[in-house]
Amino acid sequence: MAPPVYPLDQLPGLSPAHAQTMVQLGLTSTDQLRRYGASMARRQTLAQRMQVPLRYVNKWVILADLAQVPAVGCQFSGLLLHTGIMSVAQLADCTAQGLYTRLRRLHVATLQRNDLCPTADQVSLWIQQAKAIAKAP
Image 1: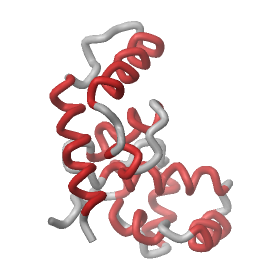
Image 2 (image 1 turned 60 degrees about the vertical axis):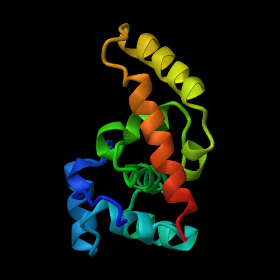
Image 3 (image 1 turned 180 degrees about the vertical axis):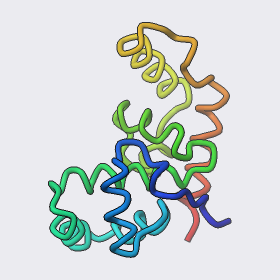
């Protein structure tokens, strides 16, 4: 199963100007960014070519990696990163209840509300899909 492909302008935390620069460099989707950024040397090259700190590129590659989980996509990749999830493999190793608890705490701490938090069923689906991706060759 091919990972979902999103235009870079849907990636959270990526400014329109940075997205445009990536397009000019030949990267137009989250899947391309994820594959290109698999190598640290390429991440460093991209940071130099974009004239941004390496930590920005690292963050964008992590978000693109998480976005390959269909139920996560660009909509929830930033939320996962804010809870400390840095890869699909790490997401696959989570327990649904543990991650759901962390997400609820984050929502209450930052948004002062719980009603926007993903459901426990959504979190469980994320983990199931991440496990399938992590097992794929």
